[in-house]
Image (cartoon, rainbow, N blue to C red):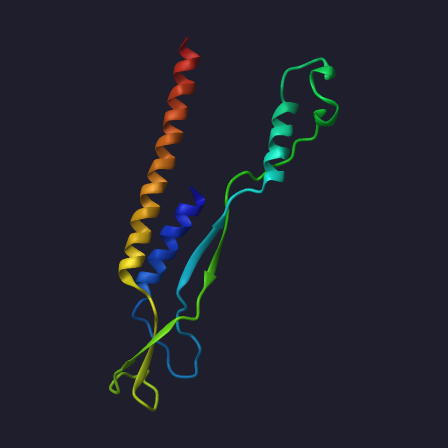
Length: 149
């Protein structure tokens, strides 16, 4: 859900700054951003599985194989996807000699942002966020009903 929330934030920032400019030489022109995400590594899954086995209510250590003896120390496995926000140096130039930020040739530097792509990204991230939220709600309902039995 954090990745989807960040995708929505990045798309919002890109749309909001699609027409921003900076004076020549200031270097303050907004750079289009993207979110790059990656899934958890298999080593993290192995660690999370080992940790979950350590929380079992077992009194006999022979229930576990030699290589999978439970550890008593609890550590975070970080199973969720990770992400980073990257900036791109994509700019477009438009001819507008009357603009206050135009260079000596009359060209104005804008961030190269495709509004259709950003809107698509925002809608897609919103739908995935809602899907994740509904799965959490379903899990809560299942747990609630299992407690009533």
